[in-house]
Amino acid sequence: MTAGHHRNRGGISRRGVLGLAGLGAAVAGGGFGIWKAAAPSGPSSGGIHVAATPSAPAPTPTPFAAAEDPETLGGSVPFVAGKAMLGSYLALDGMTYPEAVKYRRKQLGRDQAITQEFYAWTDRLPTSIEGMPKKSVPMVSWRGTKYDRILNGSDDDLIAAAARRLKQFDRPVLLRWAWEMNGRWFEWGGAQNGKNSAGYVKAFRHLRKIFDKQGADQVSWVWSPNWNSSTKESWDTIDAYYPGDRYVDWVGVSGYNLNNESPDVLFDPIYHLYSDRKPLMLTEVGSKDHGGTSKADWITKLSGYVAERPAIGGVVWFDTDTHPSYPEHWRFDTNDGSTAAYRAMARTARFSG
Image (cartoon, rainbow, N blue to C red):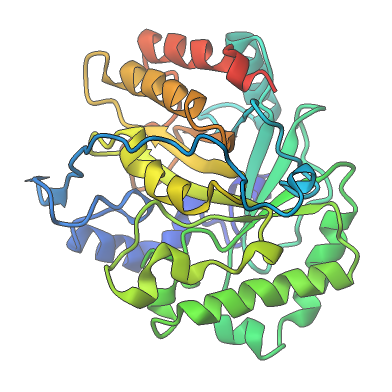
């Protein structure tokens, strides 16, 4: 892995895409970007709203009832019934990426099934990732830009070049473009584009049409909102940003246990919106250590949650302690208990795929 896989152009780290202004706004608003707390309807602590934990509704018993062809679910990265890929964004302080991969293999007795990396809008997208496990599926999280730059055609050449790059990969690729668009912290969010979620839909479709024209058939498209939206206005609902079934192969979601949110609070709303027709992936997930066995307990809950939701086909842990301007170490092995819990999850039959 090169430095560019961890950092965007100009040396700004992956999480630096929030920008100093965006981070300041998030703090002022009582939330922290992608780890935005629940809407202020529940109790609060320290100015950050904490989600109440309702009992989980029953999961959909038979997913994909509305799918036209269940055999093609997931596109070029197929969904496998009963299995969930367990992967990560992996960046450990003091280790190169290949070193971190070997370290995790030794801890878990297995490799990550998904390798997530982050790229800026103007970066050259990868044709390979140094040190990536041989059987791992790459997930390219590609930053967006203002909708006008896409919709007026001025970036068509850039998009086409990106498609040709990913077409050169030696395996199918998950492409997660302009994630967390329902938050206020990224320039490609609806809140920073005139409250125009329809513009996001048009931009997503425009990208996919260009990729298809370039013959980038090995790209599997991941649409990945945040677990909750910045506002409760109709233009900002999760579903308002959905590009449509023909343009989406996987539905992703970002959700972090920052304020003791349980997995069902973070993920059930989107699960019940889409699990009847699309496979789901937890594209960014992590847990804060709230003391004692809290982190291990949450990982165990996550494992049980995924086991009970048959439409979930992937989980991608935000496995890092290098996040700038934020005190949390999201890596799973912050203590012996959390390490053991994650290892146990990784070795379950559900994550054997």
